[in-house]
Image 1 (cartoon, one colour):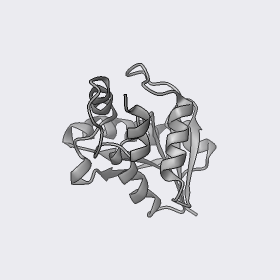
Image 2 (cartoon, rainbow, N blue to C red):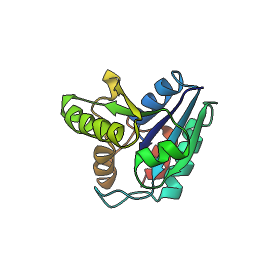
Image 3 (cartoon, rainbow, N blue to C red):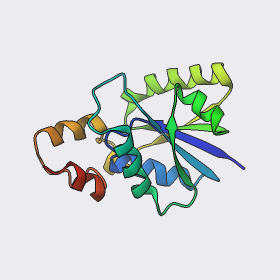
Length: 155
């Protein structure tokens, strides 16, 4: 049985995240979605509990997906849940250098392999940072996030 972990803050979850989740779920027996409690990059828009509930609702129809808390490093979470692989999404070549560095570090620490999935073209421009900016300006999020996220962030 091959298990994988897709870890992130998902603050908020985007259609790009959902695309990677669906594609990764089709490749593995079990896909864990590890939700980081805190981000070192920004102040959270949504609480960890809100992000967890949103992802449970968004992924509820995908049988082999499980939402789990991410405690510590992604490699620690992968070991805890017995994930053989870490899934990461690549939106552009600008993401590659960072993801390569993380993949090498994770492999050196634990031997876990990283699988990079390229974003689908229609979602390559999406990021949670962009969504937070659009939401802060009270603009429509239609076409950027799943409907349940759009409803939650509507002002």
